[in-house]
Image 1 (cartoon, rainbow, N blue to C red):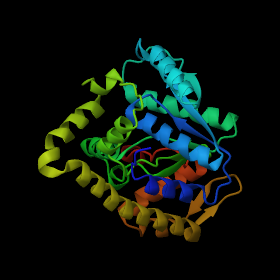
Image 2: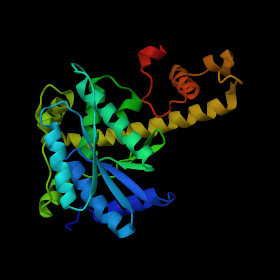
Image 3: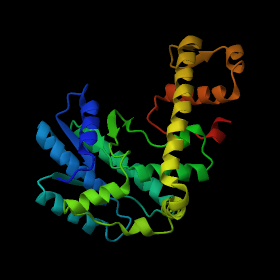
Length: 293
């Protein structure tokens, strides 16, 4: 197998699994080059470590070709001796916010499948380039520090670990790996559809890539923002432990004097934290600023 810094990839996996008695894992597979690359890498790793790998494809039913594409992915992975399952998203006609709705539905379906089958680790194939696109999208939407922190290597949804081991790998590295090893992938026509904001952003980054190394700089911005966000998160958690009292019925009490003595940024973040605490919804995205206001 031609190298894609495989030593680094395997070391990352070893760290992920060090404190986790894993027997089986899952990988999200759209059929695109990134997810097929991750599947092939995980297949090799699981073979060496005697782990069970299940590839999950979601047929989102948003394009006429989606069912055929899912079948092609299943057929190819079967030829590669990779267990595969297709999950179907049943929905009414969707007119707006298509990509976000599809993303949320994919995660809901895959996480539900993992929980039903005793799988605690779901791998997804977001890359260095995907991170840059995410940061640029959030900049254009006016996101704050949390938004431009971007995606994490390890998060959770409903107690299922969402793991992104390719965040440090570029699209060009992945393409080289796939071509060098003669692996197959399936292009999604929607990746070129200018109706979608992410495609517009991808083209924008490509336009400035040569002169500004924009992908690299956006990832650097993400790392810088994460440091600030992590500081805020730690501060809020400590403040909560010291100054908040949990009532028997699940409500939270805090002295107004202590609350209003804090900086406005801390007050906003504390309200966000308290709402998530009471609702027990720490897995969800931060509450929008205008709602907190």
